[in-house]
Image (tube, rainbow, N blue to C red; front, side, top):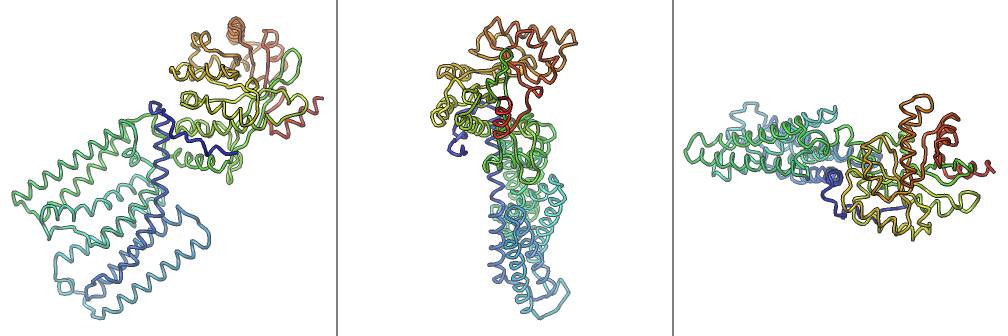
Length: 540
C-alpha cells in the first residue's frame, strides 16, 4: 500500500505553520543526506592532492602537516560511517582508505631526510610558518568538534565547525584587501579538504540546536538571515576602511573573520534561547525521532488495527474505527501517543493520514463475510489534511480505486479542525458530504466546545469523549455534562457515539441517555484484521 504518488509538498498550504515546519524538516533531512557525499569529497580531495604538496625539508613539519590531513581523512570517514551503511564492506573500505593514506604519508615523509628541529632555520618564511600553524589549528578544531559531536555536545560542536567553515574567509578577505602576507591564511588543500570535512560533520547534525534556526523557511528565519548578511557586509566594509587607513593591515582579515564568527554564534544562540519561532521548531530530542518517523512512512512500517462500534439497541456491529500502529524494526510496537504529536508538529501527519485512509478503505472494501460486509470504517483526519487543496479529490480517488461505497466511510475530525477552519476547510467538508462521505465530530467537549460549528457543520455523528464516560455514573457534574452533550446532539440530528466504555454501568447509563452507538474495551479492544474476523465469527 503506497502513497508515494501523493505530492503533498506541492499542495498550496503555505499559510499553514505545520506545513512550513514539514517543509523545513524535509529540507534539513535533505541537507543531512548530503553529509556522506561531502565526506567523500573531502577524502578524495585530500587523498589525490596530498602527494603534490610542497613540503618543508624537515621531518617535524612534514609529520605535523600529515597528521593534520590524516585528521580530515579520519573525521570524514567517521562521518561517512555514521550517516551511511555500517556493514562490513563499508568498514573494510574505510580501513583500506586509512591504510593507503598512511602509506602515502610514509612515502612523502621518507623523501625528506634532513632532520632539523630548529623552527627558524627549517622554516625561515614567517608567512609559511603562519600558514602551517593555521592549517594545524583548523585540523585540531575539526578533531575537537568531532569528539564533541560524538558525546552529543551539539551546540559546542557546531560552534567550532562554524569557526572552521569561516576560516577560509580570511584568505578571501586578504585577496579582496590586497594583503598577500595577512595573518591566518590557510593552504589551498586545508581550505578545501578541511572545509568539506567540516561541512560534512555540520550537515550530519544540522537539525540539532541553534544552527537549524538559520534554515527556517518562515519569516523569523528570513529575518535572522538578513541580519547576519547585513552584519557581514558591515564588517567587511569596515575592514576595508581599516586597510585604507593603513592600520596594521596584515591583522585586519583575521579580525574581520573573528567578527563574522562572533556574529553567527551570537545571533543563532540568541534566537535559540529566546525561542523566536515558538511552536514551529521541534525540540532537539524530537528531531531525530521525526527523521525515523519520516523513514517509517517511506518504508511503510505501519499497520492498522480496528475497534468495533456496536449498535446500542440491536447489539450488532455497525462499523469499526481504523487506528494506526507503528512496528518499529528495533523498538517494536510504538504507541500512537508517542508519534502522533510529533507527526502533527512536523506535518508528517499528512502523508501518514493519506496512508491510513487508503489502507483502511482498501481493507474494508474487501470484507465480504458476516457483519463486516456492510460495516462502516471511521478514519481520523487531521486539520492540516482538511485544509489541504486536493484532499477531497484524493478521498474521491481512493473510493474509486478501492471500490468502497462513500456512505461506508466516516471522516472523524476533532474540534480544533472546526474552530481554526477557514473557507477552504468548509468547502472540503461540503464537498465530502456531496460525494456521500459521513462526518463525525470526535472528542467533543474536551477542546473549545464552540457550539456554532455544531450548528453549521454538516456532520452525522457526535462522539462523546472518554474523559466524560470515565466519570459516569456516579459523579453529578460529569453526568450533567454528558447528558447535555447527548441532548444537544440529538436536537441537532446527530447520531451519538459513546467511546471508551469499559463497564456495564457505563454502558447502561449511556444507553439510557439515548446514545446510538458505543465502542470501548467492554466490547472489544483494537485488534488486527484477522482477529476482528475471528471476533465477528465468535459472536455468531
